[in-house]
Image 1 (tube, rainbow, N blue to C red):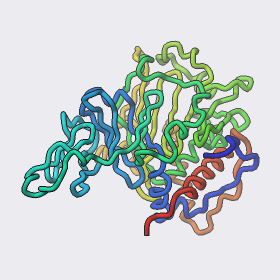
Image 2: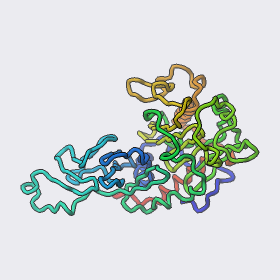
Image 3: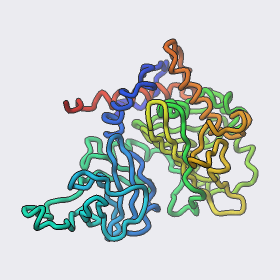
Image 4: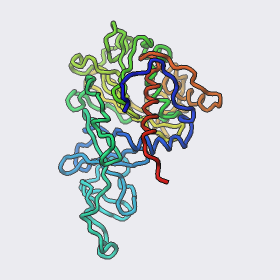
Length: 401
């Protein structure tokens, strides 16, 4: 955890080019960063009934969160204790028990081994009461559920949250009249996961790449602030007062239904990076949550979920309506664009285009990041994020031989 939550005055590129293009580097991140971090697993509302399960990738770990018969959420490694077979695929309801599809070993929803076929013959000395699924840690913050591969993490959930409680929180998903208004959108990005995070943290590009969509702000009129490893963004266009959306977007509001009593949450951020891979984008018209999943050094899946208030003119999000929707894969990707990204009117498409251009540039042996824009509304947040990556990986124990 950074000892001081201060952005650097004179930011510079800290990660080498190899960090964005090298598969061995990504494997180190899986072992030393993602496997030691808290990863978004879902929202409390995803677990309405006992037996509801969601699967999560956390570095090299496959984890599950399951709602027990007692209504409690628990996290486990998605591994049968027999031979390590994955127990669950995707998100589903498993009923009253978790059953291994390979040899039918049966576990209660609290992780206790409950049944072994032909136990007397094949495992005569087994004491089932001593066998449980490997536990993982679980934390809940504002209805957001996070998991950690370690049952007792070196960095407890409350420590990882740092001082986020100092920031007004935007939306209470259980009480704000918000409902998830679309299927999950999955973007296939041809860039390293950190390229996309750094784009999200880059206040320097807002007034230029997004001049017709977000319309700014310029670097002197927006602000990133660190809270532990996390970062929160505000517009400061309105006489320096922190605001959740650019003035351009507020002026372009066309009467969409807003969250009830939104003025009660004045001061909440417009973008939250929950380190390392979760992005929250709240606004008066809804709430968006994005999770990055590295596929390889040059490919990332971006999974986006959206909530909006019920009303006559709420925003709706449908994958098939997004620029670049590929009906064969069901994903949104640049190879399926039918017009130039700058003609799309969609800032996510503009960002994807820019990130993929950056990634292509990184492949050149002559590539270098010679300068980063100074200021909390420039590119100082990029250097802060990179330092957090470096620090956490440096603190990791060496991999077993």
